Amino acid sequence: MSPSMHVSQPLPATDGAPTPLVVATDLAKTFDVSAPWLNRVLERQPRQLLRAVDGVSFEIAKGQTLALVGESGCGKSTVARLLVGLYEPTRGGFQFDGQDAHAAFKTPQGRQLRRRIQMIFQDPYASLNPRWRVGDIVAEPLIEHGLLSGESELQARVEELLRSVGLAAADRVKYPHQFSGGQRQRISIARALATSPEFLVCDEPTSALDVSVQAQVLNLMKDLQRQRGLTFLFISHNLAVVRHVSDRVGVMYLGRLVELADKHTLFDSPRHPYTRMLLDAIPKLHATGQARVPVSGEVPNPLNPPTGCAFNPRCPHANERCRNERPVLQTIDGVRVACHAVEEGRC
Image (cartoon, rainbow, N blue to C red; front, side):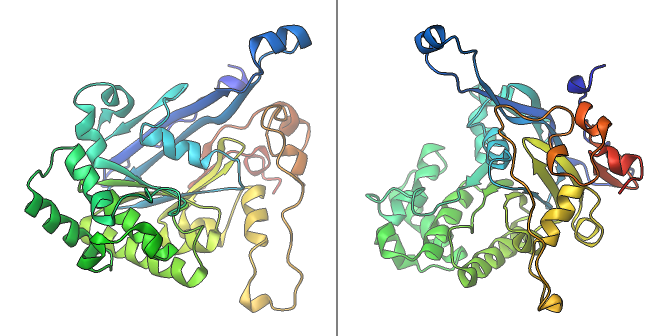
């Protein structure tokens, strides 16, 4: 089997471990970003394919939080959109509570599944309709899914949802522009909770907020998770935020998972050179006065990724095997890592 054909499989559930609610297997999404056909003919250019996500596998147990981290453009948000059905995978699949989610999305019963999976978007300024009152925004999923129809029932439910995220019932008559960024994200969370979902996909929900407001929103999300037994996929590039909210962490690079471990293991003893590079770049209070180690090099062009390991041009441990053979995500000392150097004990 050639390196490009390797498929990384999720780990089987161990005895006594909770059954995963979410299982992604070899999930991939390729976009055709070619120039128009006539331009390609005249300029003799081939088609260009962007492999935004290229064989990602993971699982999330009920009530747990998996965080995906990595530099901008590594495919985190594409994974999020694949899981909620906004994109259809080019390859691989996603099972939710034992059923093929992407097959179910295409059937009439797919509406039932969509009620159980909701998404919180990155920018609260862009994800709320500025012409709608907050009450209408939060009530929209209830009406769309036919959960409530009576005006008095809808109003009572909307007010209950607003209070659950720390807003006042009277806020339902206001417009989004009358709120701060943190309050707008609370409205987005209330809207996501309207259908009583079990799985929330959070695409950098605090990155557009001030640091003090970030903490308030993150604490609210953790409280809601405890109260409702929610399962989260949390997308972020902020490792401090990830350390606060996650149970397990997956590190992505150029569309692939390079390391997947529980939070404490990953932060205390990172294995992959890229993970180490990211963690070294975090300011540390006990290391005041010491020079920070920058994340060296640049992410390669995703339209023309390096052969072998995508990280090899930036890796201090790269050798000939790294430049020619794509590493497979495998379990090494209890951590899933895709790295020849780790496998061979070179780092």
